[in-house]
Amino acid sequence: MNTVPLDPKIFQSDVPGAPIRKGFGEGLLEAGEKDHRVVALCADLTESTMMHLFRDKFPERFVEMGIGEQSMAAVASGLAAMGKIPFFSSYAMFSPGRNWEQIRTTICYNHVNAKVVGSHAGISVGPDGGTHQAIEDIAIMRVIPRMTIIAPCDSIEAKKATLAAAQYDGPVYIRLAREATPVMTVPETPFSIGKAQMFFASEGKLAQIGIIATGSVVYNALMAAKRLDEKGIGVKMLNLATVKPLDQEAVLALANEVEAIVTVEEHQRRGGMGSEVAEFLARAYPTKQAFIGVDDAFGQSGTPDELLKHYHMDIDSIVVSAENALR
Amino acid sequence: MEHLYDTQIKDLELKANEIRETIIEMLIEAGSGHTAGPLGMADIFTALYFHILRHDPRNPDWPDRDRLILSNGHIAPVLYAAMAHSGYFSIDEARKTLRKFGSRLQGHPHREWLPGLETSSGPLGSGLSQAIGMALGDRMERGRHSNRFFYCLLGDGELDCGQVWEAAMLAGREKIHNLIGFIDRNNIQIDGFTEDIMPLEPLKEKWEAFGWHVQEIDGHNFEEIVDAVNEAKAYFAKPSMIIAHTIPGKGVEFAERRFEWHGNPPGKGPADVVAKEAQGEEMLRELRTLRGRIKSEHE
Image (cartoon, rainbow over all chains, first blue to last red; front, side, top):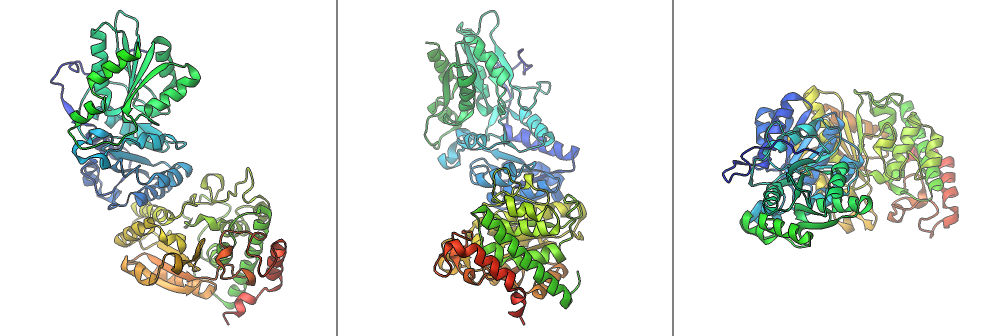
C-alpha cells in the first residue's frame, strides 16, 4: 500500500485548520444539489452541526425537529421509506447517544437508507464538560448490524465522506468533531467507504510500529509517526476513516509487517475502533496492541489541548505509547 | 369512500369475526403472543383493510397506496390476520407459522421479510414519528394536495412513551392533513389499567392541545369507524387522531376487559373462568357460535 497524497505543508507548524463538521455541511449542500432525494433533519443545533448551509438552500427539504432526537431518528426512517435520503444531525451525545434503539430498530433492522450525523464527538469538545463529550458512540453504533461508521480526519475528508454516504445505500454513522483540525488531506486524496489510507510510511527502514488512527486525532497520530521516524523507529500510519466495515486487508498487511500496533481514537478504549482492530487481529493475526483512548472514565471541562494531554492522546503520549509497545 | 350500507356493515362484521377466529388459531399454534389487543382491534383492522385503505394485495409496493403504520407491533396477529384475509398471503401461512423459526410472520412485524408491511415495530413509541416522516416525504413529492393517506395505529399504553409526544408536536406544527392516527383506547397495559399505571386522561384534550383534530368513537362500530375516517379526510387544517374506545379481548367474553390477557395466548391466560387447557377451544367455540353478537350490542 502506497502513501496517499497529503498537503505538502502538513509538517509545518502553520498548517491551516478547519472544523471537520464544516466539511460535512459543505458536503451535505453539494449532495443536496446533486440529488433531490437528499433531505436533512436537525434537533435544534442547525448551525452547530453546519446543517444551516443545506437548510438555507433547500428549506423545503429540511425538517427542524426541535430537541427531539428519538423522534428525529424515526422520522428519518419514515422519510427513507418514501425514497428520500435523510441525514439527521445533533451532537453525538444525543444522536446516536439518546436514540440508539430508534436507530437500531427503525433504521438498521428496518433496513432503510438513513444517515446519522453526530457532531461534537470526543473529549475535544472541551469546556462543555463530560456531559457533552461523546466517547461511547462508536461502541454503540459498532454493535448494530448493517451500520457503517465513518470518522473523517479533517474537513476535506468529511466532505468526501458525506458525498459518499449520500451515494451509499444503507445506514451510515458519520462522526464529527467540533474544533478546528489541521487540514491534512487535499482534494486529490482518495476516499472510499471501507478503505484505509496510508498517511505515513518510513523510508529506508523496516516498519517496527504501526499506528492506526481515526477521526480528529489522526493529525496527532501523523505527527507522532513523523517524530518516531525522526528518532530512527520505522513506522507506518493508517488513517482508518471507516471504522466499520473494517478494511481487513490493510490492517492485516500492517500487522504482518510491524512488531506492534497502536490504535488512536478520541473514544473509550472499550468498544471503539481499537476494539474493532483487536477483535479482527485476535482471529486473523494476533498482534501486540496498545490502545490510546479514554480508559473507562468520563471526560471533563478544559481546553481541548489540556484534555488531549490529560487523556494521553497528544503527540507526546502517542510517541511514548509506541515506544513502550516496542519494549 | 362512501357511507356504509347495512349490508356492508353486516359483511364487515362477519369478516371481523373470521379475522378473530384466525387470530385465535394463530395464537394457539404459536403458543405465545398477545390476545387482548388483537381481538380488540379486529373491527378497526377489518374496516381499514376491507373498506378504508387504498391498497392492492397483489401489488404491495404500489406507489399510490395508502400507508398503514402499526406502532404497537405486539398486536401483530390482527395485522397478519387482516393481511391474510385480504390476500397478501395465505390464511394457512398465518395459522401455521406465526412466531415460528424461519417464518415471515415474526413475533413482532419485520418489514424486510414480509411484503405489505410498511415498517418493523415492537419497541413502542416510534410508529407515529415514522408515519410523520412518510407523510413529510409525501408532501415534498406531491405537495399539500396529496391524496395518499398515512394511517398510524397506536396503543394507549404506548402513550407513556415521551417520543409519542415529540411526534405529536411535530405533526401539529406541520399541520399534516393526510395523517390519521388511531389510538386503541382499551385501558389496559401489561401491569394493569392505564389510569392506574400512568393516567392518560384527559386524552382528547391532550391531543387537541398538541394541534390535532380529535374524534372519539366506539371502536367496534363500523359506521363510527368509517364516518370518523371520512371526517378526518375532510379536515385539512390539522392531523387527525381518532381515539377508538375498544374492549380488550372483544369477542371472547371471558377474556374481555382483563389486562391478564394482554400478553398471554390461549392456554396461558388467567384460569379463574376457563381452565387453561380449555381456553383455546372455548375461544373458538364462542367466536364460531356467537356470530352476530357484536352487531347486536350496538343495536
